[in-house]
Length: 356
Image (cartoon, rainbow, N blue to C red; front, side, top):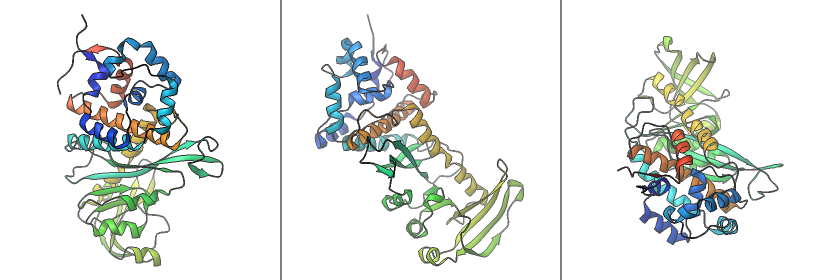
């Protein structure tokens, strides 16, 4: 006699179903088939249909009450509102972040630390004309604010390829006391001043043509690679107009590449080397982008409409966060990648249900 539920059913138990039903009621839809597709690495609607038909006797136990046809999936992909999945993903993020609030990330700080970055997903212009990027290609951009404690996305915004990454700063509500780490693409002093006024701190790279006047030099330990730690004031007309307050400029010689890096921050309290280490942690958001592109389905899409693409991306984000929740609740030592690999092979297996 078989004991235990199917692995897929056990995984779904970790979803906040009441919240999900509210999302469904708000936009009229359902989610299980595409979540299944992400978890089992299905490549197309035909692939999903074939896989589900092969496991027809187990569909009821997966929570799928009827036969799933490819035409039904295609129609749902086109018309079922992507905001269902966006709202639900935000709900899962709200569950996951407290679970990782004490997770170390490489720098000993009690404050919240976020890495901000944007990745581009290339598309074919003739197939996705609603997502213009350049004259001969289309794309969507995934603007992400990543909480470095647990690498959980705090905010995600999906846009067409033409939206410049710096514009995402206008959509963020600065958290007082938090650190925002970003690369030079977000260097807009008028926008960064809004974070400064809110009591938030930013760490970014300075551009080579930055005009600034040194006001004071602080002592540094050159054995760490630090060259200087200075208080500066911007002297460029537009930069000074946008940010009149003093800034901190730190120079570091990177031993790995033998290049000199320039960092800018509005925080004057942390040691200079800690500021450079905070920027090093920014690579976590790039690893997050690399991970979801490699291990979830957000480069080959099941549909060509804007609704289909956004739905698939938000479902991929939901799956990532769901697996992170399960990992923490069950106190698993395996990595998220290993968990996805195991899940892809065991979704139709019956296993004893583990307690949360």
